[in-house]
Every structure is written in C-alpha cells, then in structure tokens.
Amino acid sequence: MSKIKNILQVRWMSSLLFLIALIILTGLINSDFLTYDNIVACFNASVVFTLLAVGISFVIMTGEIDVSIGSTMGLMAAISGLIAQEKGSPVKMLILAVVIGTVVGIINGLGVAYFGVPSLIFTLGTCGVIRGLVYIVSQGKTVENFAGDFTGYGTQVCFASITWYYAIVFVIAIIAHLLLTRTRRGKYFIAVGDNPGGANLVGISVFWTKMAAYVLSGVFAGISGVAFASKYGQITISAGNGYEMSAIAACVLGGISLSGGLGNIAGAAIGAIIMSSVTRMLVFIGLPSTYDDAITGIMLITIVVIDALAQRSAIENARRKRLLMRTALTKADTDAKGGAEV
Image (cartoon, rainbow, N blue to C red; front, side, top):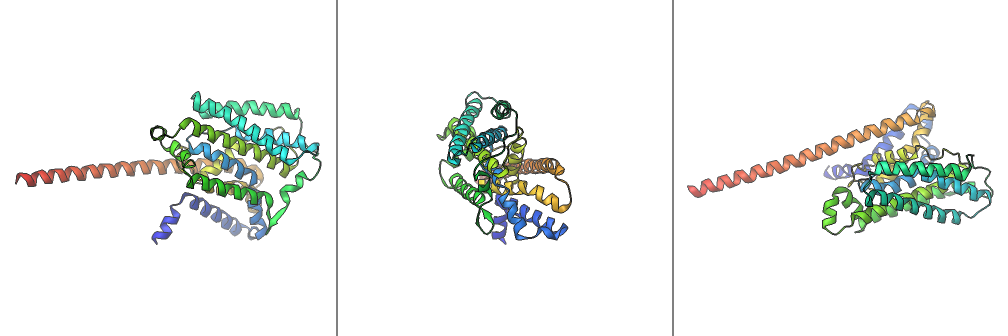
C-alpha cells in the first residue's frame, strides 16, 4: 500500500493517470475511439507541443515565464517553409532554428535576469516583435507549395505506427528529464526556482541559470517551428498564435508549478500529449473543434487553482509542523526545569 502511495505522490504520475482517465472517458462515450491507431495518433500529434513544453519547462521551473515561444515557432516555421520552397536542406533549417532560438533566448534572458523586467511583460514585448518579423519574412502571405520530401518526413513510421518525429522527440524528452533530475547543473533550475537567494548563497548563479533556461526555451521553440512546417505543409501569418498557452497548460498539467522550483520534464511531455489529444477526443465525443480554446482555458484555470491550493496547504502544514515542534520543545524545557527544581 505504501508503495502505491509513493508512486501516486510522483507529480508526473498524476498527469499520466489523468491522460488514461481521459482516454477511458472518451472511449466510454464513443467506443470507436478505443483503437490502437487512435491512441497512437494522439502521441504522434503531440510532437510540436512536446518540444514547446519541454523548452518552456526550464523557464517555468526557475519561477519565470516565456510567452514568446509561439511567435518564435511561427517565425522559424515561416523561414523553414521558404527554405523548403527552394528544396533547401532540413539541416540548414535546424541550424537556423538553433541560432534564432539562441538569439531570442539571450534577449529574453538579459531582459529578465539582468535588467530585472518582469518576465511576462518582457517576453510579451518580444512576442510582438517576433510576430512582426513573421509578417516581414512571409510578406504577409501564407508560405506553401514546399518542394521535395520535406512534408513527408513527419508521417514516416519508425515502428508500431509511431512516427520518427515522435520517437526522436520522446528520446529528447527522456534525455532532458535525466539531465534535469540526475545532474548537478540540471538541478540548478529547480534550486533557483525554489529559492533564488539560497541558490546564490550556495554558489549557484541565478543569472546564468535563467539565461540558460531562456536559451533552451528559444532553441526548442525554433526546432518546433521546423517540425510544424514539415507536419502541416503550409504556414499562415498567424502560425503559433496561442501555442504558448497550450505549452504552459501542458507543463501545469504535468505537475510543474508556475511559481517555480517544482516539477519535471516527464510531466510536461505527458501534459503535451493531453493538450494535443483534446481536438481528437472532441471529435469522438461529438463536439466541434471550436471548443478547443475554451476547454484549454478551463483546464489551465482548474489546474492552476488546484496547484495554488496545494501549495497553500503545503505551506500551512509546514508552518503547523514547525509550531508543534516549537511547542514540544518549550514543553520539554519546562518539564526539565520543573524536574531540576524538585
């Protein structure tokens, strides 16, 4: 029984159970959903969301936020589309994705970690600038008519109907999870989000840790843009709008606290599957896809409220334990003095 309790206390396990519950609930409403192909399709469809969620996880764990990832993804998707029109190499796209993502990450990191601008405000400004660049790069038109096999890469199967894209993203998520939880520097992100002042005192650079978090967020957003272009085959000027909210919701669903210092990459990856599965599940339930945003918002609000209540409860429990310990120590001191006087 204690082992089961310990398993359930793992934050990403609750998100996995939530995913399973959603699949079962959808299957109970419409049994046609419970097929291997439909369930695997939910995983394959989560490639873009998983990349975004993994990247922004590092930022959220440090106690900050990055709402520029959707526009960064849209910019890199447009650039990838233009390169694909000329039969350009996917390697060139990935290199540009890393470079552009790094530049955006450095700008965001400097604004937040060095100049001390609130992360929501600064990255919102960055989002606007990058969104303007999307219009400039695409000349206000939809980027389409890709040449070569670029749009076919996303559907190539690796094994058991799992696409190569998802298999690669899954491996990336596992590596990121292990680096975050098993390496000393990986644990810096959690330490900074949990207690920035304490992290500084033990020699952890809050500035460089947040810089690294924003660079990783930008790079993953850039790479997700390449995957987006390959998957959908055309890039509108609004590509990426709202994706930052879905990525944040995926992280929160995966057990990452918005106040920082808590969570892991595995949870974010599972949350991304949940977010990408909503549309498919709505189809089988019988609701139109126009409900997507409303449901995403409801899920985000619900999980944030639950997270806030859980944190408040944890703080109160810790405070109560400290009070009980102090009371017990005071009583022990009083008893000791009374015994000495006798």
